[in-house]
Image 1 (cartoon, rainbow, N blue to C red):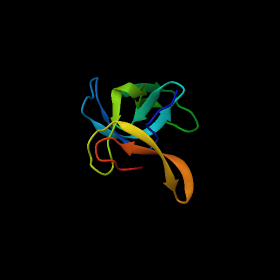
Image 2 (image 1 turned 90 degrees about the vertical axis):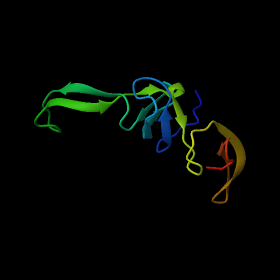
Image 3 (image 1 turned 120 degrees about the vertical axis):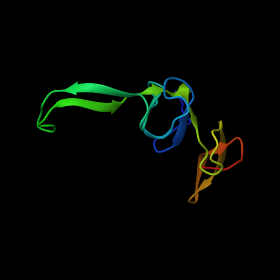
Length: 107
C-alpha cells in the first residue's frame, strides 16, 4: 500500500476521540496502512519488570491509527491538505516530490 504520509510529517487527526489534534508522525506502517502520531490514541499498558525497565508498572503508549483518519499539514501554508505527486529534482537527484494541493509547495 502506498502512503503519502511519512515519518516526521505534521498531521491533523480527522476522526475519533482525538479529532482536531495536530501531531508529528513517529512511525509509519505502510504494510498495515497505519501511522503512530505523537500524543494521539494514547493507551495505558501494564509492563512487567525487565532489564530495561527495573520498576515495571503501567506505561502510556501511542497506538497506531488508520492513515485514512489523518491528513497532512502543509509545512508552508500550515493548512491541512491533500497531497499530489510530481517529478522533480531534490539535491541534484531526480525524484518523485510531494506537492501541496492548496499552495503548490513541493516537499
